[in-house]
Length: 144
Image (cartoon, rainbow, N blue to C red):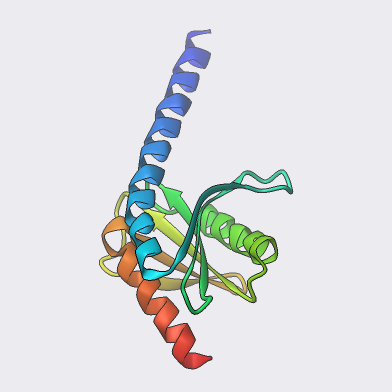
């Protein structure tokens, strides 16, 4: 019983940390609205696979599904970000949605794109999130 109580306590603590991190990311994303971006938080997936933490789309239509983790990014988190981006593509009618993993612990010194299977995932910390999204949206717009 004591082992179960400790485990449940640890799970509750992790959930609270994750919730706080999602609020931090939301506070970074919300100002994008004044620049014409669409910003949506906590979109429940209708396929039974949880939620998309944040979905943003630039004024030019470049879209991002952001998976938020309070700890370090794991390989499985990249897969989760990719899965959310694929689902969000259909949900929001976007031609393409870029997966982003925003980590709270040990983020890269600058945003980096890493390959995950056939997908490419942006990994960044909160400090660089806004600039990463603006830059990636601008680059995609120029390439189109």
